[in-house]
Amino acid sequence: MTTPEIDELVARLAPGYDDRAAEPASPGARALLAAITAEPRAAARPRRRRYGRYAAGLVAATAVAAGAVVALDAGGPGPVRGYANAAVDIRRTDDTYRVHVKDVYADQRQFREAFARLGLDVTLSIVPVSPGRERKIIRLGGASRTGADGTPGSIQIATVLDCPPGRGTACPLTVELSGEAVRWQATEIVIGRTARPGEVYRDQHPAAGDNPPSLRLTGRTVAQALARLRARHMTAAYLIGEFKKDGSGNYYSPPADWRPEGGRHVAGAWMRSSDSVTLLVAPRQGDPGPDPSRPAPF
Image (cartoon, rainbow, N blue to C red):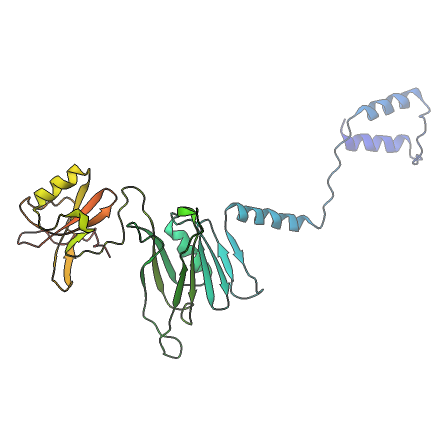
């Protein structure tokens, strides 16, 4: 018997009942009442409350926090004044943007996303570099644009490079951007980080001679240089180019599988990674052209 049917039957049997419990007069009625009271009571339907809308908002906020993405609008209506994700935290104070890099090994797209959320056209790259150049600005550039009044704008960049003792590679990296052009000029910032073992350095600067001098490979034949590298358990990569005494010159990356003849001479050598060296050889007729899939280093 369903609950609605029971309610209707009880109403017909005792229409005059009030809040005071009375004994049924007949044995049949008493038996029916016993059967009714033995039925389990249906769970009370929860009452709808006004705070349901706020609870939904709380769930949404919790989901955002779990994804480590936070957007702040400290000034009410208007531009967002702060944004953070798993890789970076950016806060705006007047015309200064303080960029706190939380993970220098993060996906570079997360940096781009954070700047875009604040309406900035900034590309921040954190790249592996040779020892001693960590946390340094490796490259700074951007599109040449002018303001609404036709005058060129400027951007100032200050980096907080000092780490508290004992922090090592876990020390946060902080960059401050300011200047009248920071909000409308496209900007590219490349900063160095510690390279993993075998990771190619992105701060290579091809030139004549050895860098560091302890390599002692310049002037040797390619075969001699390779023998010395094998003894050190190191490998080699190649560039084709030449430099003058004043430091001017040019170079390019040949196809990755190209190897110069062993009798050609090394014009320059520098560390490519923790376990490899780049060898520069002077161009010769018959050499391959530049490989478009292998851009030359900075």
